[in-house]
Length: 250
Ligand SMILES: NC(=O)c1ccc[n+]([C@@H]2O[C@H](COP(=O)([O-])OP(=O)(O)OC[C@H]3O[C@@H](n4cnc5c(N)ncnc54)[C@H](O)[C@@H]3O)[C@@H](O)[C@H]2O)c1
Image (cartoon, rainbow, N blue to C red; front, side, top):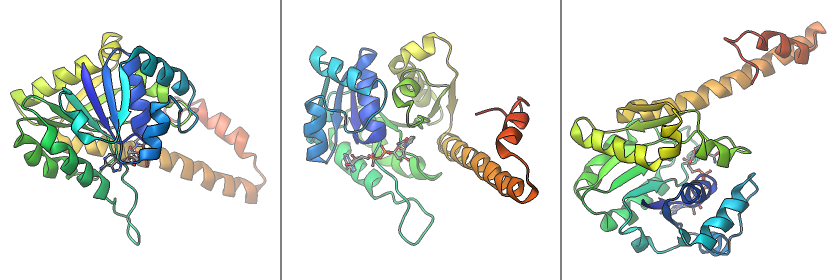
């Protein structure tokens, strides 16, 4: 399938190369000329196990290319949007400037039947506010959050624990989910859970997963402080509580 990936940073560069590695024809698009020049030469901009190999292989096979020209998204069936959503200065809110910019740039090149798959981590309500603009072009917006771990980014993209697709109600959503299943066909074929939700749930799954993982780290850090004042060994403590499957070892 022809795919575009808008935003070729950590998430996008890995996603583009990983999608090419499972047989798709992929164009990666970014506003950063230096990043695109490096990726076009097959140079991974950061180290991730396996990234260099799939980048080189995709470019050599001719099914992976990179450009700064958004017009090259035209003709792709699915457009993944993975631009940054940093924290706003002086606020806890996410800065959606790049998401809005990417949608503004992409909308003129969408065709009826296209799918736009948002991958950026966004506050709940973002997809619902973008969907009417995508619908006007005849395309469908889905929200498909990314759960990759740095250090395992390629593995997690090619073989994720689960896939989540937030879709609009009705037949339009069912069709969009089935197109995404086709995109992720190797994972779907091996039985990876593919969870179809509404937009709000998909957005909240990602932020709640982040919050839960942060809570685990904060918890063991707090236990380390208690261990220090009580003379206990936090490493042994973590090992011992980790044997309980409800707590886990990771
Ligand atoms: N890095 C991770 O481990 C990870 C994991 C899961 C989810 N995410 C989420 O994915 C999103 C992207 O994160 P990242 O780490 O890849 O960020 P990043 O800063 O590495 O990359 C973002 C890229 O988007 C590009 N960009 C900005 N505006 C653009 C536009 N209008 N058109 C095309 N490209 C544009 C930037 O030039 C940059 O290369 C964030 O929402 C993040 O929370 C990241």
